[in-house]
Amino acid sequence: MLLKDKKVIILIEEMFNVFEFWYPYYRLKEEGVEVTVVGSGSAEVYTGKPGTQAKADVSADQVSAEEFDGIIIPGGYAPDMMRRYPAMINLVKDIFNAGKPVAAICHAGWMLVSAGILSGKRATSFFAIKDDLINAGAQWVDQEVVVDENLITSRVPDDLPAFMKAVIKMLQ
Image (cartoon, rainbow, N blue to C red):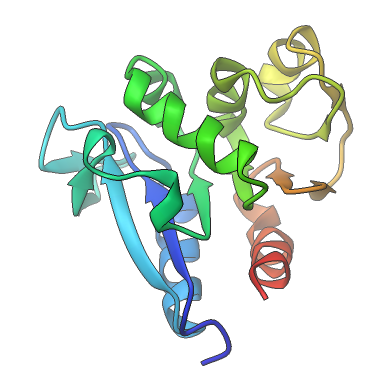
């Protein structure tokens, strides 16, 4: 249990990608990380695509960045919902500004755009939101995982093994 003293948030909202939520959730648990699922507060249970459900432990306005060692943002269409809630955006921004790991996969780059943390950063994402990241000031690259200081990004579910290796390494 290499990371038993670590606490990490995984964000959740409607239409989350089930692989990008559950793979990091169980991989972190495997390492001994205390995982807290944080939702927007719009529901207690969120439905992912294609229908898997997950329950939030708390809402974003009930936690603060100081309590955690990092944050993971799954993709799917959930990030488009997440960024409608200032408390979720502020949580990402505060963790990033504290120098703690912020990990985003697939469409989760939308949350990085809304948090205003991409200027001058190398990042990747699902190709369809490439322009959004570039317009937010990122240098977009097509790689399975990109690490730029405390920012970790990946493109698609197939990148999850490399993504989680980078997350775990940064949490050590």
